[in-house]
Length: 202
Image (tube, rainbow, N blue to C red; front, side, top):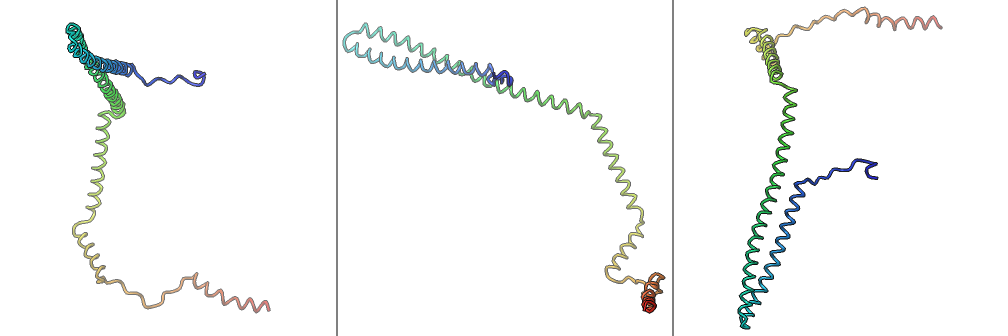
């Protein structure tokens, strides 16, 4: 039924993950085997001591030979555990390296796409246009700044200083009343005609 409603989700567990898990399981089994052998050796050591006390030297010697063989097995087991742990570490580090390489690959692809969009020629063209625009603006600024001579600029500054201090001679205000405009004159005459209309109406 699940396949009818959607695709089966892809497992995130890789082959490397499974291999690491199996190696760790084997390592744990070897460690359990080591513990079992250590307990058995302790018992056999006590048993060999008891046999010697009972005068059973041959049996005690045979038991010690067996113990010696098991000691050699423990050494081999320890070497196998070391090899398994080293392999686990190598696999885990290889996974990290793969992720780093994948990241580098994605980064390189992004850089290639960016380089396709903006080539060296395009960058040089933009830089040239920017430089031209800056130079053009500089020329305009120089033209505007050079429209007045140094004498004119001094005069402007002097006038500004005079205005600030109130020493500028402004033109006199005319004392005579200014003539009225025809429009304002007509507005004044209109109220005078209003009483005449009222008298006619009476």
